[in-house]
Image (cartoon, rainbow, N blue to C red; front, side, top):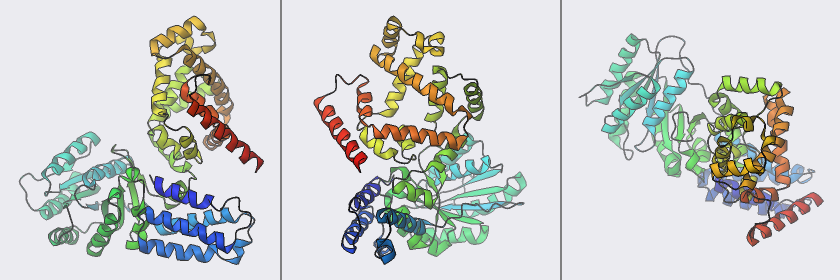
Length: 487
C-alpha cells in the first residue's frame, strides 16, 4: 500500500538531509521532488497543485529556514497537508436508537460492493445490532447468490424476492419487512453497472427518494486510480453521498485515489477494504495513513486489530504464565499463531515505525515461510524439550532436524534465540500494552542498528556459508551503520 509514494517522498526528503542549513534553492529542489512523487502516485493534478501551493508557502517561509532541524519541519508539513487533504472523517454510522436505520450501498460492478455489504453487516452485528442485508442488485444474477452465501457465513438474514425484476420494489418491500422481523439496521445492496449511465442513476435516485436511507455509501476500487475519483464525483452529484468505502487499498501501490478523493469530491473515505476476508474492513484514519505514507508506521491500527483478532482468553492465560516466570516453546508457538491472525509478517511490519526499512534490508527473505519452518521445528520436539529447550543436546538436535527437514545448526539457532527472547518476555510481563509496544520497538531499533544479523539469519547459519554477494552487502551495511553513528 502506497509503496511508490512512500519511496518517492522518502527520496525527496533524503535529498535535504545532511545539508546543514537549508536554503531557498535546495528547499525548492526538495519540493519539486515531492511534487513529482505525488504525480507519479496518480494523485489528481488539481489536488497536487493545491497541495504544493500551501506547502511551498510554508516551507519557503523565513521561520522555517531558521529552524534548528528544518528537514523534520518539512516532514511535519507534508504530513499535516496529507491529513488535511484526506480528512476530516466521521466514522459514525449514525445508527438510530430506535426503529430501522437504512444504509444504501452503491457502486460500479467489480468494485467489491456486495462483499463490502457483507463486511459492513458483520461490523454492525459485532457492535450489538441486528442487521439485515437486501439483495437488490438484480443487474448481476450472481450477486443475489453471493449475498445469500455471505449472510449464511455471518448468520445475518438476507432479504430476496425471487422473480422480481424491479430493484426499487425489492428495497421498499425490504424496509417494511425489516421492521416486522425486529431488525434495526437494513443494508441495501443496490445494482451496479460496468460504467455510469442515466438508467443506473435514475434507479438509484428512485430508491433514495422512496426508501429515504439514513446514510448513502459509495464503494470504489482503489486500483482504478483517478477513475474512482471521477465515479465518486458523478455519484455524489446524483445522490449526495455520506461517505466512500475504498476497496483493494492493500493492492494499490500508488494510492493516488485515496489522497485525491476527499479533496476533489468533498466526500470522505469512511472505511477501507484491506483484503478478501470478511474481517478486512477498517476505519480510514487520515492521520494514521499519512504516517504510514511517510514511513512513521501506524501502531494504533495495529493495536486495534490485535484487540479484535486475538483470542482474549488465550492472551489472559499467557499473561498469567508470564507473571509466574513461565514461557515455553509451546507459549511461543501459540503467540505466533495469534500473530498470524493479523496478516502476513510484511503487512504487520508496515504498521511499525521504521520496520519498512528493515524489511528492505531482509531482501527476498520470506518471513512467513521462516515462521512456518520454526513451527515445524517446535512440532518435532517432545513436550519435555518444549518446556526446557536447554536439555536439547547434539543427538536431540539431529533428531529434531530430521523430523522438521532442516539442518541441526538451525535447530540450535532457534533454541539460542528463544532463550534470549524468553528472558525479554519475562521482563515485559509486568508492563501494560503500550509499555510492551515500546519495549518491542526498542528491540527492533537495535536490530536495525545491526542489520548484518538479518543477512546471517537468512542463511540460517553462523555466516560461514554466506555468498560473495551477501558478504558485499554486509560490508555496505556495516559502513552505512558506521557513517550513521559518526553523524
